[in-house]
Image (cartoon, rainbow, N blue to C red; front, top):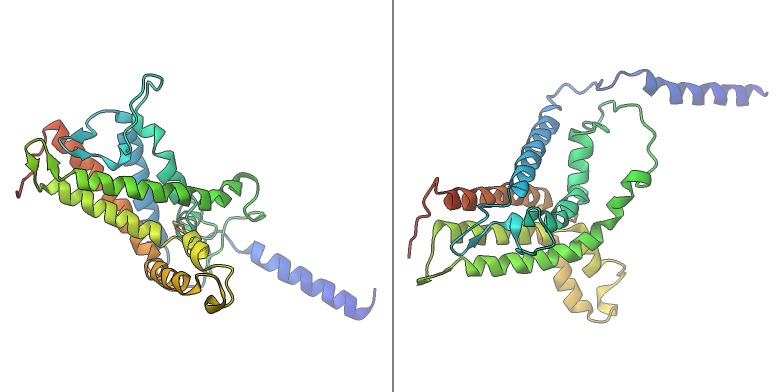
Length: 259
Ligand code: FES
């Protein structure tokens, strides 16, 4: 072997072996980098535990004109003996699980791959989104279903103002309206939707309906710029909406009526 080849080979060896000697979690970052992944992990785990518990309850999901978003659309049928939420929740769960922001969040906070920038991750063999991770490619299809759910949640929000005695506004009406709005904001900021309306375009003015697509793309981009914030606020609020309806239905709290 020539001198140059030998030098190159030993250099390559040095480059490829040095990082593996670093311990998991080691970093030269002086800041409290672990705070964010820890907070994200706690937030995600709290939501997963509560939503799983609520989904399996199968009761106290509606009161008057209010319907918990975990159970919407409500499908009651004799061939499904379990909670009706289980027929629905796979759509928003799949949508969030495959969301590009949430992937970053849980890859970092729950699987530490890596936990943060410049922090040594677990030894692993990353092959892209293949094998078990193949389902991540289904995101755009979950988006189509999530868009339908947004319409249904707005219908629920409007229905929450129609009491047996006629039109009214209760705290629950406001809670469910905010829920529909926040889930709409999260869904409209989806990267797949942004690609759908503005992707594969080199020049909007030369495309059919280019002006309209450009306007739509700008509109989706506004939501997309704060996708992480929409993701968290809508996650918290959808859980809170279920809890509110549940507590009212159980008689633990009373819904306050403004009108
Ligand atoms: Fe987050 Fe599509 S990228 S919902």
